[in-house]
Structures are given as C-alpha cells and as structure tokens.
Image 1: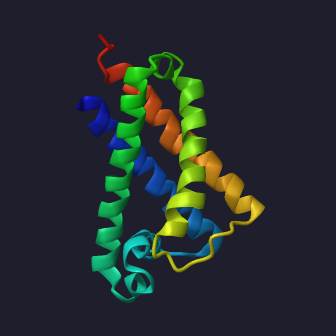
Image 2: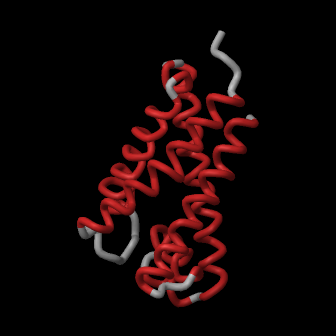
Amino acid sequence: MQALLWSTLVAGTLDITAAIVLRALLSGVTAVRVLQSVASGLLGRPAFNDDLRSAALGLLLHFLIMAVIAALFYFASRRLPVLAAQWLWSGLAYGAVVYLIMSFVIVPLSAFPGTLVPSVAAFVEGIVVHMLCVGLPIAYITSRYAPSPA
C-alpha cells in the first residue's frame, strides 16, 4: 500500500504542477482552468462554468486517475519484476505509454470539449512531462517500497 500511496501522491503532484506551470507560462491559463479541464472529461463544457467546485472535482479526478495509473504499474511489476529492477527505463517507457493512452484513447472517449489533435510541440511536451513526472516516480517508488514478489 505504501508504494501505491506514495506513487499516487508524488506522480500526481508532479504531473498537475507541471500542467499548471506550463499552461500558465505558455498560454496564460490559470490553475483553476487547468483543473476544470480535467473535470470536463466527466462534465463536458459545463465544467468551465463553475469555478471552484469543478476545479476541486478536477483535482480529485486527477488523483483518482493517477491512483489507477500507479496501481497498474505496481501490479504489472509483481508479474514482471524486471519493471521494478530496471525502474529507470521502465519508468520512462511507462510514462510515454500513459501519455499515448490518455491522449489517444481516454480523452477521446471522455466528454472533454477541447481539441484532441495536439501540435507537435504539445505532443513532445506532454510525452516528456509524463515520462519524467509520471512514469519515473511511479517506477522508482514501486522499486523501493513494493515488496519483492514471492
């Protein structure tokens, strides 16, 4: 449980912080708007009409999604111990896979009202952020805290 809790908290915090900082710097988008965009995956366009409640929902959804992402890596590493043993490479690869699945499967199936075709720059930014802020911390924490498989 420690591996899942810490993976979720660390990766979730790094990922949402990167999203908020990058959006503020590159586009002037506020933290509330970033969190509303997460909530819009469930609520659609109405998520942008309610400032703090939909932002709070977005933050909750972000960490719930991150918990699932962390759990998938954890349980995969129990079946394939090389994932935890080679945490650096498996973490980078996992972050890239998470980004691709989120961007090209999950978000298109959601109620998110925005564009689903990222620019090359947005694609590169997203994949790098997910490799460094999601995959690496999850793989590292799993390798350090998860018990060895029996």
